[in-house]
Image (cartoon, rainbow, N blue to C red; front, side, top):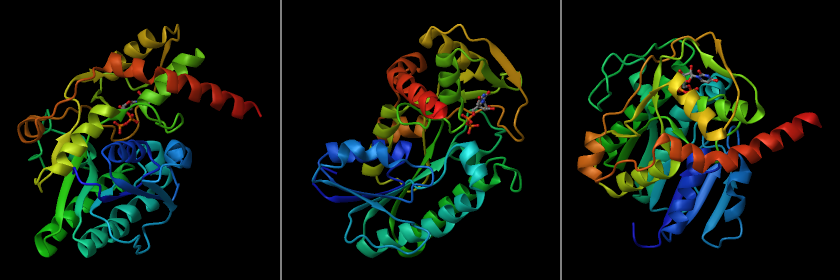
Length: 321
Ligand code: UDP
């Protein structure tokens, strides 16, 4: 992707979508971001507004859409935190199905390269550990997380069908827990929750006994992996995540250390179907893309501290109004 070509990013006002827009503009592309702002925030793109190479349109991709010729389609539209996708279950299923068809139709019409954000949730509460791309997963198809898990599994199936049937030049990234600036403070995910609580001196809410594990990737590493995948010609899914695994208790301790907070831990009930363990096997990304994350959790939390500090202050002020 060295030529200045036009890239479309669905979900461009979201956490990952907006960072992707930044990276594409920095690489010299003309970027059109579209978002219905259900969970994305237009302010994530404020800094790009006056850039001639950038355009934002508020648009619902569950209706057929066409923003003119594009050379790349990055399909990132979808509520992504458990709190958000459970609150917007039907919208999540629709964007994973209808939205995906429409994004693929655009890629097909313009013969554009296509990359979709899929998820480690395709593996469900995994029985294979760490998770390789060849693992089919252990997903509850009717539980509270199913709206997201099955939407993304459907997205993957649809993407493979367009590749096989229409020869669309598709790629599938399975994204594991990612964090960094522009995450919504109140989206309920563990790092924003813990950062907000630690910075306000509130108890950190550890769900269950905190022995469940996650593997956290800093956003700049994630975006680098996604761009490398976009430039590759791999059509089958590729895990893009950080393979260093932490228990949620260890994660809480890292947050307390980085924020120098004296907050205590408070245990709350574990949500239904909360995966007990999650860690990507990234052999495929290493071999195929020459990619691996560089930023460890503590460094990434330090890099995010300013953002969370400001967000926590603004949120407190607006809550007092
Ligand atoms: N979690 C927690 N306290 C919180 C928020 C989340 O202990 O305040 C736990 C949650 O139960 C899960 C892990 O942290 O085991 C990661 O949750 P998150 O919502 O960030 O995303 P998930 O990986 O489950 O999609």
